[in-house]
Image 1: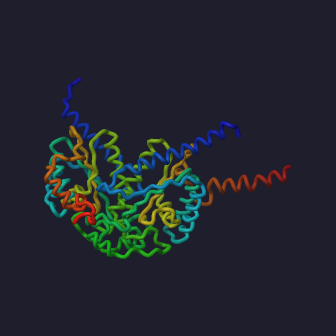
Image 2: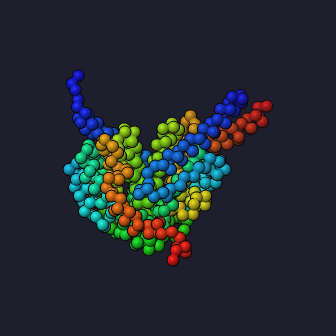
Image 3: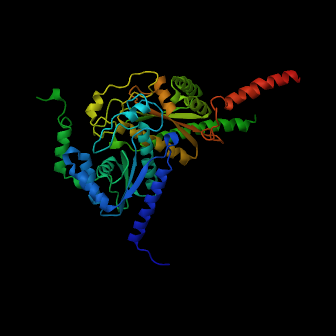
Length: 215
Length: 223
């Protein structure tokens, strides 16, 4: 038998894993039996675009900037991003009121509001179907032993860059075959001084004690 | 009935309760956007509690044509052994402050200013809700479904049960959105193979017609 090197094994495995995640998302539970989601998987080049876009949002969205910076690290090792999107209009006819309109017809007829992140107003059940699919993909990644995290920020970036077409809402499942989990406890980005400064700014009362007790 | 059969029935009930607790655990630990907790999960494993809910669902089925299937859902829930209701507490009054525009209001400030739908009979959920927050419910439900599958028990997901539970007042007061997950530990899943007219023709009405009504007549005549 031919020898397969580790890098090749990991790359191929990741490719199969993303396919299986897409399959799990595709076959996940749906309200109203409506399977209308669209999916694409993007590789490192597109991830770099998304990362730069998110990072450029900077102060406007610290969360997006954090994720953008993280992705720039992420793409140094095997990784992939599954983008899952859906249209915003309701095809259920539930008339449930969650969107703020009494009937689905009213919501579908309402004026579309554009923004960088999503087009609204959107049907609550469309959103649930979309996010159940994302969760199913993430659950599959978890079972396959991949590092995984679901990002709205990267999905918003992909939507703004028109990487995924013909959708109004988008969510992304990022997976990685890095040697250590790159998604959580990202302490390497913080110096203690910077962290203390931010903490004191955000939670000024934490270190101050009870106001009535000091002069 | 044999003693061991009685024991089996008691054990089956116990299995339902244990499964519900494990499903709740999986639903609670599923991801939340930004790590902000907001979902609660409530177990209803008492027949009387489930019946209250079914009555409410049947009332709601009268309200509008789009909800006529609530009656069928109620019949299915009566077959189920237990029901878990997952709620979203922050989607009503505490938007995520990330200006995602999923609700179509551009910023969260605009959403806060928007008046909610009135508590009318034909309004199930008093939107506009913060959709970004309510999406956490999708993770909770999928966590619950995934656990139910791993445990190998049957489940069904019903938004009608969530809407009715909000009306019966058994959920926290801040609930903006709720979804029901029914579970069943039975040999035939009550959530699959639902024939037409299930609200009228189901195990209970079959029992009522065939056994409670016809059999006494038969024995009166042929005795």
